[in-house]
Image 1 (cartoon, rainbow, N blue to C red):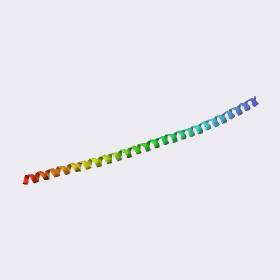
Image 2 (image 1 turned 60 degrees about the vertical axis):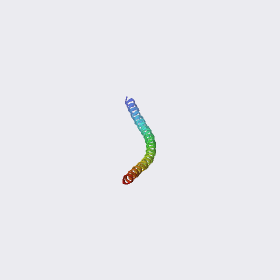
Image 3 (image 1 turned 90 degrees about the vertical axis):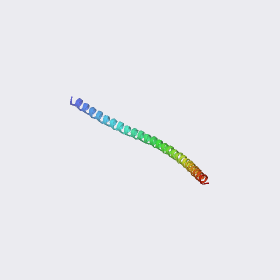
Length: 94
């Protein structure tokens, strides 16, 4: 009976050690998989951020160009108005 109890105790101890080993291996595997997924997510986020930055830079360039064109058009329009007023003033003087 004592032999059976000792054998059962050894079997339980062995089962606990195997269970701990399996738990640790699963924990390590989960940690590695989690880190891999985290790195993949981070990499995708960085790629998306770079694409958004490039898109924003393109839009900023387009807006600068449009702004420059509109400012030049506004200056031309103002010049026409000034010339027109000046011509009218000279006509009225005569």
